[in-house]
View: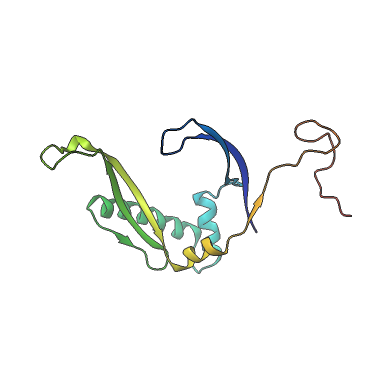
Length: 151
């Protein structure tokens, strides 16, 4: 199954400070979400543990992950990948003028393991944009079928 994308228009400026130009970019077009309960049922169906057991483990993983990241550790989860904290800050002209107030905030960074990195290489993309009917001239089509025509 391919990952869908849709097109959006964004105004961008070049690094030299030129005038803003509109450009078209592709962004993911997600087709839903999987919540924790569904995830637990799916994992439970593939293993010998119940979905309640899976949920208990994932809840504890979240708790421990939070504790370990706050303690400044990188959390390695085998083939799944690694979690670590990163931060951003304002720049200062020298070390003496830098203060803790220059630290803007933290982010959690996930680095995927080998199998998830492979997914990035193998994923296929397909447009989810609806094509305009050529004869109608109206946006979004003129009431025709959304099924593809076979010639």
